[in-house]
Image (cartoon, rainbow, N blue to C red; front, side):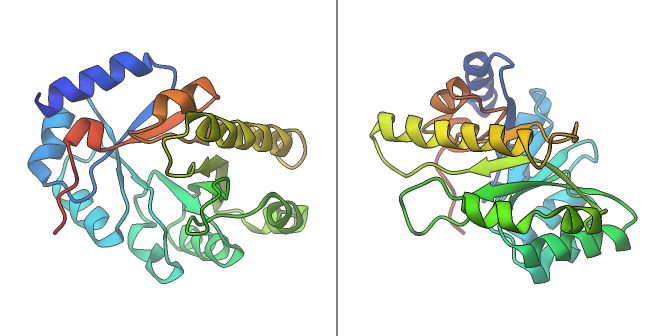
Length: 223
């Protein structure tokens, strides 16, 4: 099947229940253009250098999402144009994004990454860390960031019940944050969860945004 066929099949399964972020990491520009020509406009990358190169060489109406772990010293390269940063997982990163947003005279949209998996390797805040970090003072200070919601990654497992449970816990956590810290925020409305292997479970559990790569583009090309 072509990239276009794959894309249409994924969209048919999602049926507008969540925004589709087509994960184009490691894929050449021709592959991105094939998806673009089939109507896809939101793409996700996990490496800053690849993201900036693609931004410079591909159509300007593409919305680029940074979905990988982002180091503070690389924020400046994507700050002028990035549409959404999915993996904000430290106070230092929040402050750096805010600083770069100010330099670029824009509010940079971000998602707070929460640790929901049992695996140690996944990045993200715990609920306690987040609740103690997000004081009103800090949020007032971060005036060049738009916190749009949360992001999480489930454990890499075949156990669908476990995946379901982890996604459910992220939705519950989102609800608690929405009721408490973000009750006044109309921007705080996104739950980014679900990838090629589990996006349908994620949508059932309340995801508003899924990050799908291999189901559209095929297996990853390792450079």
